[in-house]
Image (cartoon, rainbow, N blue to C red; front, top):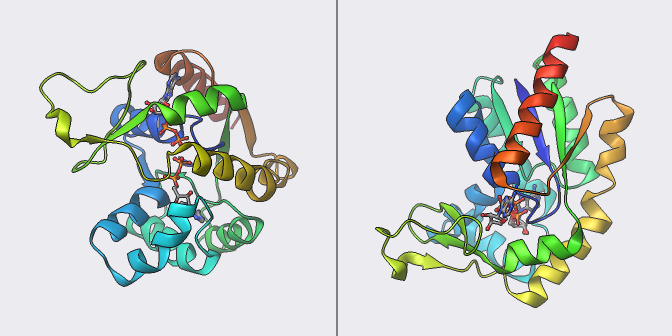
Length: 214
Ligand code: ADP
Ligand code: ADP
């Protein structure tokens, strides 16, 4: 399947995409993870992206286009899900053109719906493993006890002021893509509240219903 996992920061895109990869073998392509890795390795891309990410702004379209397209090509244009891409109308249009040119259109855009106050609770309690990038939540998905607590850190963009800015950027630049995909009959909305497994069950259900629709 070719999917986009869509939704605001903190909606659970990465968590759900990770489960879909583990259990259904669909490759997760996270532009956020790719950019953070580039930042850690201080590559040219990482250095260019750093100031935008730390301010909670979007990295310029041109910088992310190449890395998203490369990652899709690496999966032979099939069985992938994009987590965190596209985030602007320009990116969505490029993606449509790119996939159309390879005759591999998207099957669905799964939109995770979570209210703002819950997003803030999720992001402010999110923690990541400094080396593996594995995501945890202090209350809902705590790190296992055998993990060195010194390696469990907070993302630099998960600070209160940056969280507020990311939510505003989402509202202004990314949320309008829901109607872009609705117009193309690709959008499937899923209630993203409740437990991680509960949300996963809902996603499996809607994807199955869509697969049977043909
Ligand atoms: P979250 O999981 O909270 O939604 P991500 O890990 O997806 O955040 O992204 C972190 C940051 O990386 C974003 O705030 C943005 O600065 C940058 N980024 C990731 N994907 C894109 C994209 N498609 N376009 C522009 N910037 C992006
Ligand atoms: P996104 O990639 O959309 O920014 P994440 O998958 O990183 O979101 O999830 C944000 C935070 O919320 C993480 O700390 C994650 O462990 C936690 N989380 C994810 N899904 C749920 C859920 N259904 N209930 C509670 N917390 C969740």
